[in-house]
Amino acid sequence: MPYSAKYKGLLLLLFILVCLTALINLSLGSVDIPLKDIFNILFTKGVTQESWQYIILEYRLPKVFTAIFTGSGLAVSGLLMQTLFRNPLAGPYVLGLSSGASLGVAIVIMGASVFGAGTAALLLSKWSLVIASSLGSLLVLLAVLLASAKLRDTMAILIIGLMFASLTAAVVSVLAYFSPAAQLQQYIFWSFGSLGNLSWQEVSILAIFWFLGTILAIFCIKNLNTLLLGENYARSLGVKISTNRFIIIIATSLLAGSITAFAGPIAFVGLAVPHLIRQVIPTNDHKILLPAVIFGGAILMLACDIAAQMPGTEYTLPINAITSLIGAPVVIWLLIRKRKFIF
Amino acid sequence: MISARDLSIGYRNKSGDTCIASTINLEIEEGELVGLIGVNGVGKSTLLRSLSGVQPYLKGEVSILNKNLHKLSSEELAKTISVVLTEQPISKNLSVSELIALGRQPYTNWIGSLSKDDRNKIQNAIELVNIEDLKDKKCFELSDGQLQKVLIARALAQDTPFIILDEPTTHLDMYHQAYVLKLLKKLTTETNKSILFATHEINLALQLCDKIIIMEKDKVTAGSPHELIEKNAFSNIFPSDLIYFDNESVSFKIRT
Image (cartoon, rainbow over all chains, first blue to last red; front, side, top):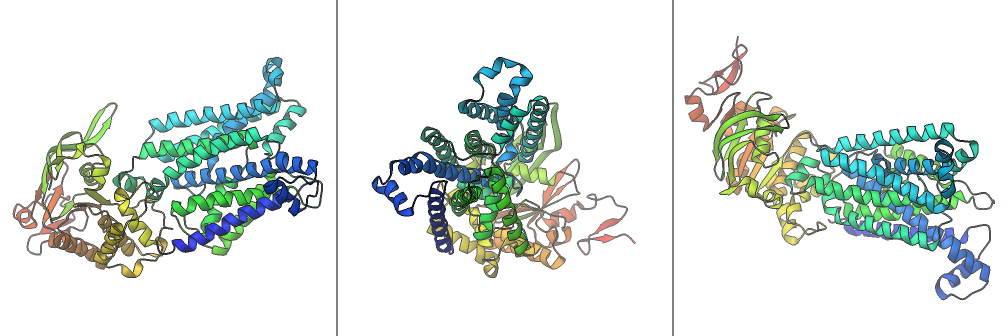
């Protein structure tokens, strides 16, 4: 491609933006730490103040990594789904993964009051939420995979995913209806999403899933490009449609499932980032799109986290609200400016 | 080159097979342009899909370059037969050269990088179809006729001895119908590829094709246009109340 050099420049620019937003993120918080000291703590280990080092290394840095993995992972799964289903409205949620996770968490938090006190004992440690949401998305994933093995038509999988989503949402509302206010509030807090509070151990588990999912996605790049012609053409070019579909679904599940487990059901990023990136880099070549979307997702998430901390105040807003508050107008503005939307 | 012996095509269901057409015998030689005609719903697309290996056939045998079609791996098949399909959900955001480059997919490495040879084949395809000026356009900027040429160029870039097209002239005006079919004719003579296409433009097909396959409800007839006209094979394709085949002008006429 003659223009790939131009795209490489843009990718580099995006990468620099990732570093920049990460740095701003590190410098923000209730305690003011000068940039110079942040560099010292990160690179030379020279301790200026014990508490600063603790704040940066044990709180802000894991949060920055969580934001990067969350944003980029969701963006990659959004891209995979949009290409697989050839549908601009697809995102990680179309497989019903976030809804499955929500159901798992809802059962743990609110189930106690409905099913009796038996489950209450092991409730509400953070790991139980992670495990519940993982199990929830795994369950929905298995159902979707079973259905996809039976179905030849990819569009039918999309509808089945949406049906699972509405089914689990219904169960969650029933649970919510019978729950006392305290539990309900706790569930709602989980559904706000959260990037903080992850230990290094948890961040590294998230990282492992992120790498697995992303590596699978990288191996799909060639076939993803072929899918842009539609499944029939892809088949005629030697792509094994169902194997390829299986790998793409697994990659998405690894990414979206693990992210929802640790950071909650973060909306919007998966759907929007691929569209935003296509506006900036007008290509459909996944060799360019995939890294661009990884950087773009990380930037959006870091920027949203900066906004969520409302610099200058002591409030922190829920990240899930911020992603939509910032992201939705940006997408609307970009599309209106271009007037023509071609997918 | 490609031949079908006693072929039955249709769909396999749990409740049994649904046969659409049976005892099909046909042969397509190297460098031949072959038109497939028949009324809507008679099974033209099913036959094309069966011959291109996308859909399993029920009975009989299809061999291509002396090999059984179903013994070919999906990769070998992609290097033997390329297709041009209509009404596919192609991403209109692809540029023309990106779309044509996807024809090289069966030959590229795991991530799809184009080698020098790939680039040459792509350039060659662009020149053969004469769309040099469209190269940098996006697909949404193209007219139907231009898009059809680009899709044909993509099939050429796939560099297969055999190309199958499903109704390549749909949505085109009369000039572009003739343009596309003449282009196919030119390709068969210049590249010695065999091309099979389904069409409703019988009058045009009769003037250009080396061979015509007529698909009717209970039989499939193949032959050169002359042979078929002599056998009066065209008179029964359509119900005779509105149109008839005029042997003198070699075309269908409206009954007055």
